[in-house]
Length: 276
Image 1 (tube, rainbow, N blue to C red):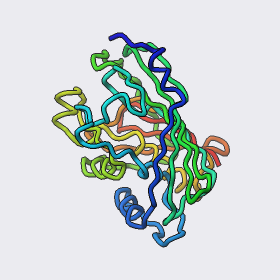
Image 2: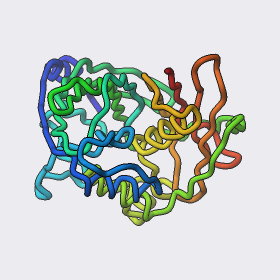
Image 3: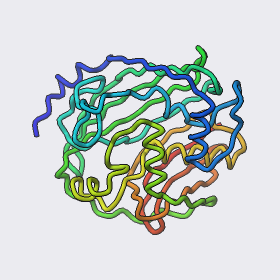
């Protein structure tokens, strides 16, 4: 499939802005999804990474593509490769988001690049999200999105992930995946439509969201150290499916924590680094 990189790079610099009030009900549903408890009073500090659930684009159903994503060519460039995934990203935390605040996300397309790997052509789109909470600078987020061809050959299975000094097991149930899709208004069918993801896309099961893995690892880092990190960066290495439980792993790395997700006996799926 031909890919006109010069045309796609015309999207660099494009911006969009969305705002939403963080209500106690949204925070309550977020906590319920992750089996967590936190204060819900107005002014209380909100759960870590809840901003990923706020101000998401509300694209009409008629404008969605067959995979449940918005049709190509809106804010994001119309990359003609059919498979789209979250490849990684980074967060810088400047100030807490609080219950009752209006949270605004200003998104800017920073770069569009083309690479060739073992799975064929890969198009990377880098987006920076500038998050404010009640007008305060709260989070700067870099998001790396990758597009690839549907007929990419399978890679050789990488070696099994190591066990962390700290570890926790999470049941990656279809209910958990569906709830997170609902929280983030994410219509991508690979996360909730088992016949589609196995029959059309050829995966063995529902795919665990990249943002949800990042949230679980960031929460785990904060639990282990007793405070939210000042920065958190991560990248996806291989997909996780609902066919097995997910392990959250961590080891101390000086003043930082190195973290990763995996399935028992499986390869590292996402790796991350938290810094205080």
